[in-house]
Image (tube, rainbow, N blue to C red; front, side, top):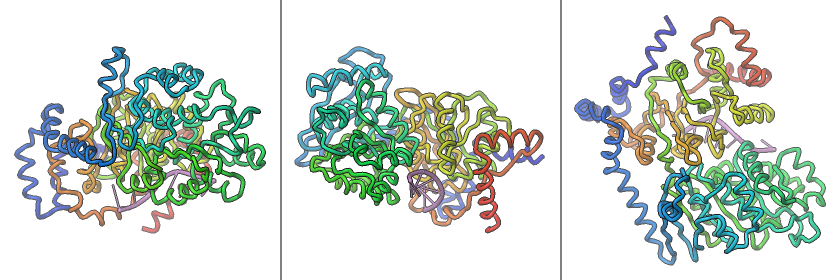
Amino acid sequence: MEAFQLLSRGGAFDKQRFKNDVYLFSPAKSKHVEGKSSSKVDDGELPSELDFFKYAKGGTNKRKAANQNLQHEGKKQKTNHASEDEQDDDNGTSNSPLPKHRVTAKGSRVPEHVDVFEALTDRYQVPSRLLENLSNNGYNRPTGIQSYGIPILLESRDLAAISPTGTGKTLSYLLPIMAALGAPAASAKSDAGSGVRAVIVAPTRELAHQIHNECLKLAVGRKWRIILFSKSTASTLADKSVRDKVDIIVSTPLRLVSSLQAGNLELHNVRHLILDEADRMLDSEFLPQVQEITAACTHENVQKAVFSATLPANAEKIAMKMLRDPIRVVVGLKDTPLPLISQSLTYVADDQSKLPSLLTYLAQPYNPPVLIFTSTQPRASSLAEELVLNAIPNVDCLHAGMSKKEREDAVSRMRRGESWVMVSTEVMARGMDFKGVREVINYDFPTSVQSYVHRIGRTGRAGREGKAVTYFTDEDAPFLKTIANVLLQSGSSVPDWILKLPKPSKMKRRQMGKVKRLEIVNSARKIGRNDAVKKRDMIMGSKRRKQKAEGAQDATSDD
DNA sequence: AAAAAAC
């Protein structure tokens, strides 16, 4: 009976019900909203294409036009316009599945872009060995950010690169670094000076690990020392004569900072400093650490570059101050998901209704692996647990509260395709490239546009299609319109009534943030529990699990 | 908004 009630509350998209709840947020406008919505109920049922064109007229195009005008306003700066469409026409090879984006490059003396990787050898003497490694790894033609960004970095210029998720930003900075490195520091003919020459900083261990892997693939046949910085690798570099022979370090910020402070690392010889996921690296939590790192890079010719799919104005300001005579490259529209990702918003009345909705979803055919995002670590753990208890196969969990080994194991199961359902926190939201992910579910509503764009950007990578579903509850209403606009901007359709919601800024958002979200409410503790618990402990680690459970109980009793 | 992540 209980289960039936839960199911009947969750399930299908229920406009009517939500509409009533809108009153809660804007009593003054409630009649207006209701009147308009009910007279246009049919709009929501139009084919999605029609819906899109309708709203694109009002919002999307205006904004595009505004963007373009802004770009033309630069005074002393030169603007380059180009389009990947043209490049595709030139070449005639239509095996490029990548979406076609407008590219703008703004700054002084912008180097010309390249249409093919081979042009890099002619123009910049990029070693052919490097290009071989490219094609061996399946890189045939440069993406937008690669064709513009690589020449800029090869000309030793500073760069702020904004390009959508899954469009090859990593290669855009790795290739120029490797082209510029020359002989390994350890070799006799090196004129590299002493100390590491390139540093790449990323916000999570998993991402740093992935970048390091890419780095190794590209460096095949060369003897550079490329270090994924961790506690153990850092300790092997305690000996200065050893660390002076390192060429490239990939690291998370705090790891670098603690080595700097311990006097176990010098960055005075760094010629290339890359901030991946730049807006994250420049947010208030990471900024002090990043500043310490940049301050330690004292070489007069240090080249700095920042990369992200999103770069809010304040982060861009900080970035531009950091950079010297920078060039700003924007591929597509900033802070916007790929149109390849078909996005939808699903109403679930409240937190308790989410699990039944998800179970219903997972009971139908879906494309594994599915990546599910929750707002907190305990919620990720307990949701994974619930799915296991409900006999969903191959459930995995990954958050930063897990041990290093547990995290690594989870990632490798994911890479091997053994995970069908991966429940995670923001730790997985940025940069991670699991090529198979075709569906993302935002179980908990994202807390920013940036978070939304990066989360759903785990699918639709390298030209593949993807699907993203976002659950929203009554509590999420104040932020719904903001995210709905992002869907519109990227070509997904949104029901009429959502767009008619009052402006987010006018809503009472303060009181909304106070709702405490604890663990996923259990709906089905039944038979086979012991087996399920064993399996769960294998997935999440029993020790950690116990700690989490105790912590959560404390939190509950507080209430 | 606000939690997450970084050692």
